[in-house]
Image (cartoon, rainbow, N blue to C red; front, side, top):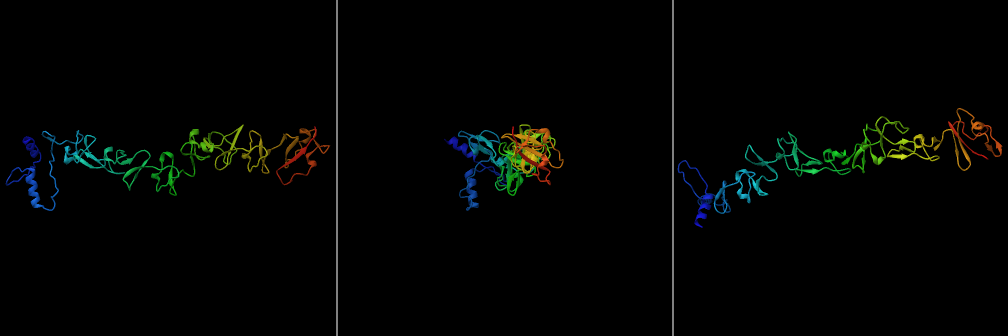
Length: 340
């Protein structure tokens, strides 16, 4: 017992160099002297050794940075380390400086660095400066890397929006470029919209808008250019851009405003007087002929195409027998009943 007390007292000794009267005092003597000199400041002061600790049987040297430990008082005070996960380590917001041989505060965004441990948590050193990684940005208020925002979420600046989704901050919302990209719920990112930029694969076009990366021309609002995101236009599947997405071309006789809204390839129709109709002629069920007549060229095709056409019991030899179309119109249409 006396041996242990002796060793404990030796661990607590503090060396003091006095050029006039060198001597050694123990912990109790030093504490009494300090209490006499500073009676108001030392009532709860505890003096401990900076170099050694008592391990239960003897005084041993305190642990250096990265050495194993079981208690924080086993780590060197001069290095400002703590016993974390059984190792003398720096606190979370500090890193160990080899040149200073102690723990020092980590640096924040865009501050100079030489290696990752110099930067705050969740940041990396890009050889010169500390930066947040992945889909995170540095939040000044919390001094931490924070998750970036997704589509239509609140923002103050571009860096707060997901770059990998093609978003930027506009009117305090994370949005796609309104010029050439649109948000895709399917892909969960901004994709090329109708006829805006070059595309090398269909994956770059917005599938939510039914767009394809097409290398051909089509009669759409804008002429298709090489490798542009466009609506599909082929026999059996004709679509057109309606301003928001690729819509199916209209069937015969349905309303239209432009030729590209009709099935120009599949049904050979065009937009005439607000409806998708045949350009020259067509035979339709229910025993009716729908004849589209070019009023400008004044060509009479009736006797050649329909030699047995009858109008109210009388055989028709010329469409010009009728004045049912507007002479000022480019295209006119006449409905003729016939008998077999």
